[in-house]
Length: 188
Image (cartoon, rainbow, N blue to C red; front, side, top):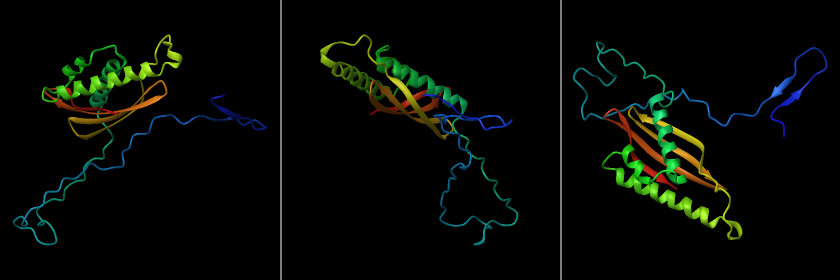
C-alpha cells in the first residue's frame, strides 16, 4: 500500500500529492477561558439596573485558551511513561507513590496494581493452545488527550493497547510545592 497518491497531468505542471491525515488533533484557540460569576444579593453601591457607574472601566475579555502549558504536557508524558512501565511489569506499582500526593498515594498505587494484574491475566489467557509466546505484547500508548482546567491542575485520558485489547486510563495531576503530583488514577 502506498502512502501517497501521485496524479501527473500532461504538461509542465507539477504532480499533485495526497498525503494521509495526521493522527493528532490541532490545538484549539477559539474557546475563551471560563468566566466565574458569583451572584450578590444586592447591587454594589453606585450601580444601577443598567450596569456599573460611569467611573468603572469595562472589564477586558480574558485571553483565549490555547491548551495545556508545556510544563503540564511534560508532567503528563512522564506520568504516562511511568504507568506504562508499571503495567508492563518493568516497575513495581509502589513507584507511583513518589509521584502522588501523600493523601491520595494509596489509591493511586492500588489502581496501578489492579491494572498490572489485569495485564498479567490477559497475557496468561491470550496464549493460544497453552503455549507461551516468545515475547508478550507490551502495553503501548495510542493517544493522549489532556486539558488544564485551571493553572496548576491537568487532567488526561489515555488510550492504551496490548495485543488486540484496548484500555483506557484517566488521571489528574496537580502542582504542589513546585512538583506535579497525581491525585487520581483510574484504569478501565
